[in-house]
Image (cartoon, rainbow over all chains, first blue to last red; front, side):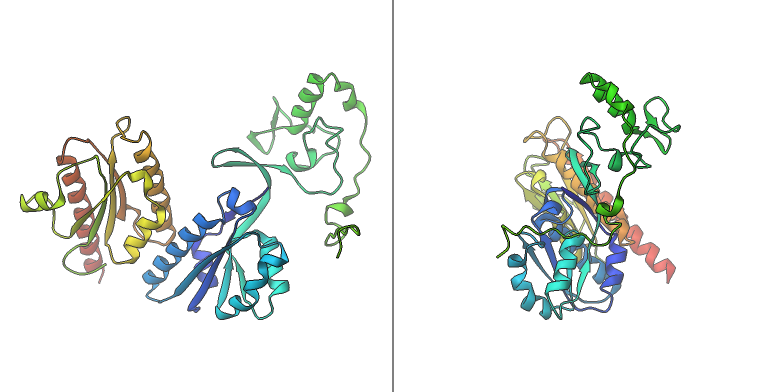
Length: 222
Length: 136
């Protein structure tokens, strides 16, 4: 899922400085699952902003709402009119939701309340880890299911590099060297010989280096 | 923060410090301006409850829950402690004193620790007001 994190309150207060009526808009998709922008986080942010504005001596009217998803047009429909009633819609969705509101809701001033961080897994309650970079050219079949693009600091296709020491990455001793993990995983699967196969130079155009990515499926188009 | 009397809200577990606020006040034990809100369990508290109390005019807010290992609902006060921690973080982000929100673990059969918690918060508020006055 997409992992996000609320922006510092000071940054959000600065964004809405001078505004008198704001809608805090949550999303029940990924950001709700990672406890960054669902109903509960909308409540906390609204309360925190009211308290912050009170401390600044500036009144503010804050309404709250949460959409099923901010990345599907049917759920955004009400925001096209409702959003215009506010000085700003403070979206707690990932950047996709913010962009989609900006694209689809003319006259609505949408602002981001979270930083969209990465595609990650939920290791335990309150702990997430990046597992996929969305590079558009998956090589997990070659690496025992472990992603060198997302989990190697250098995104090496043929690792490990010389900075791998004792199974740890040189950038941080708390970070596992994914190429060490890949070797262990392939060995466990009796496929360690696969490591000798050199992966070709990657074509990074699918990773967004070729411009914004789109996908169309003719069979699903209206 | 208002001048003069402090306005403190204490969210207290129904099973902790069972003597009522009125009785404690009549006995001269509870500081003026402290209001106790009884909850079935402090684990039910939300971060917004604490923040909204401050936004509504409370000078400080505290939570009094069961001592670790004695919680009537096993982990209610533990969860409340975490939420108090979140609220403290938010106050720090807003350049407010995180000490204006506090968690106290109080024995279930004694009222003394609840009174002490209320006095501690009254003292913090008084100290803050004194600090504000001296800055002027």
